[in-house]
Length: 464
Length: 103
Image (cartoon, rainbow over all chains, first blue to last red; front, side, top):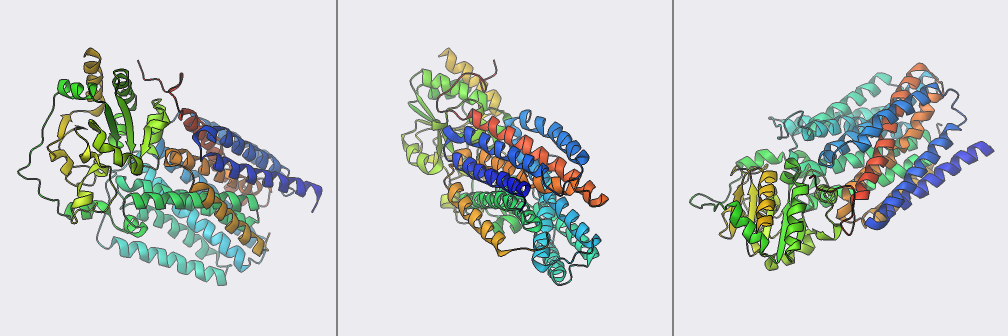
């Protein structure tokens, strides 16, 4: 190994260590920021090291790419609002996977062109790289389009969908198998890339908005595995390590999310939640009536409560009501009450969605309480204030075996002494499931846009 | 490079283990920053893109590498910045500055 190569490898090793330390720093909110800054430094070191790589002879395209990428990346980092974080994450999976796929295609093309014999392990790495990469590009783009509401977030289903998808996937794998034996079949290689690309679209097409946390986590994992496969293909350890970390992270998150919905991966990917939900029988709610409440009465209840538990859901993000919620909480606290926030793992559209939103509104993070911890505290709560959450508070998940969400762990809002639900109208939630909670005798409904209702509540509580 | 050693498989498996051990300890509070952080880190595929774009092997490789450099740089730059922006917001006590409710 020449001294120059040694130096390059040293920068990669440094980067790998800083990445792992950076991720470890995320176990504590206090240390996280500094750790991630060090990880960013690791990236800079690795990139500088690579520029010394002996194969690099021309810097023109590299510089142009780095400049253009920075110009696009900078506003994506500084300007995107926290409410748009799920689609921001989804689009970043597109970029990450695209880079891996293109490098894979470039490697394959170059090997063939130069007449290099592609060994089976290298072909395997290239195959994984482009398959994972291509399906993540299109799948994440689909997720992005749904989250950004370029297309409807509802599940799109048609007859024979699962058969088509599985058939396409098996065919893609079959071509991959053939290429392992005959790596020179260039046309088939590109067909395989195209099929994986198509598969990504079809895979995410039938998945509804409420299942996005699982999809985004899964795409996170695939993007990581594609990077790792790139590392195998070009013999670069820092890529293998970073990709493995990313892959592990995405995998863990998708497990956590699936568990929080009491569903398996397979069920999320091939279950088409919306269609089964529409067919599922909701426990009868006819004959039951909901109780509406005026802003004045709701404000009174909140103002004199000793413990208020706020239960945020995706509706909070849609209404961008996080700042007003905090204003209301401040007022209640000023009057001597205590306010906590109950965070369900799948509230929102991605893992941790509610936490970032509320942190943005300057809510101290020790008030953001996880489901397992807060559930025992609901009986002591004078008021549970539900803001834009629906399925995660539906008691049918505990009691109604015919409900599509039966078995999903939920927040025990119904055990609170009083319940106020902010809701636009009585239309059932995203999954189309009736919510027994709204008919509970302890529940009062405050109808209207969440942000407007909260603003009115703030004004009322101030006046008391 | 056309030789793939078993050593890479070791590296992958050990890194995945480290990933599992570290990441299972990340609290749900920080799951969104975790996701953007791992995403930024895996933008290290930039080093592969740089070689493809700059090795002057053939036009196809240069162009694909060029686009890959752009994509990976977007993630590296944007990913670390947005992770930092998020982590800055997580405070134990309400602090001054960013995140004040609009007047």
